[in-house]
Length: 419
Picture 1 (cartoon, rainbow, N blue to C red):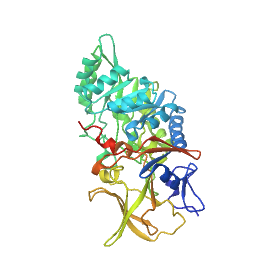
Picture 2 (picture 1 turned 180 degrees about the vertical axis):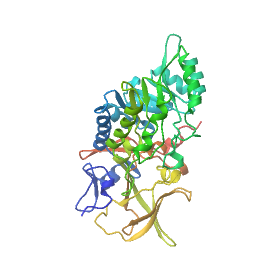
Picture 3 (picture 1 turned 120 degrees about the horizontal axis):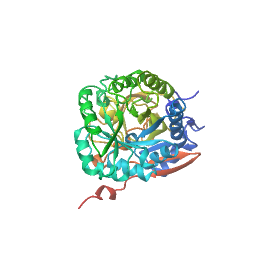
Picture 4 (picture 1 turned 45 degrees about the vertical axis):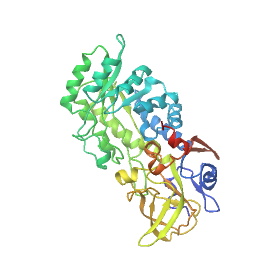
């Protein structure tokens, strides 16, 4: 009988006769020996399959549409390169994501730049690189761009609009409601649209909206379309991303096909048939293709049963930031029966450094490997050095082979910026 949590890992995950988790032909104990722990492990074929699934679902139904990967979810150059190789554009937020996208080989014309507080330096990088679309969030973006764009040149832009959609997700990842720090209400957007249309240095291509992240109901995402249509007819409508990902066996996000069908139905009702549509999947693009591998360092059975691992909020802030629920398995003991309820905690000096509470496991021992599935999104990107923590490697696995695409930080790396 398969382990009940096995389907949270990338497709094809298996358990070998010794009870060890196997991903893409690689035993996790071998991965731990070669790369150490913690490590973020990515099934490259699963990542590529998801990119193709998104691209096919959208462009087969509407040829005048494109998918851009929201790089902030996993801004590793190797991940961005996979997306480029699979025919996707890239959505970037900040100078570092632009530079890594260019290192990944993206066509700058297929890049969409975001940000509610873009700096002059970041916009200069975008303009000089020939970024295809800059999403202007405010008047200040326009002021800066008009100073940076050379006379005789033109920068194409979209205006970010607050669609006024209240989504059923955690408040920390809602973005489409009135009062959001992102975008402009309809009245303010109309004023900025008029200003851009009068500018000789900017070309208004259309509008952008985003409802939020980790949204399970595709209808909430499609609800942003009508408010965009109310602002006028444009060549481009960027409908953002936000589709939820599956973290636990109880999660039931809309499928990619259901999500695309909902968006296109709304577009068919409200938008011009010849307009280009853009979507920006991030979390749902990468989350299920990766897991994090830890070693148990301490087991404390007292008022509660604590299983402490050699990582935590230094490599996964999602649980602390908005109480994201995860599951986990003892990755070398998958044939054993669960025996106790535990709290999985990290090594950092914060009471909030709790990865999973509660979790039922076999009786854990120091040295066990703990694998947490569905950690492809917003782990690497928000990793930090709290308590002198060295950020973990990113390891790609494929056809029984493993390779580090980002190495583990060294102790020397922690002091590289000392002057």
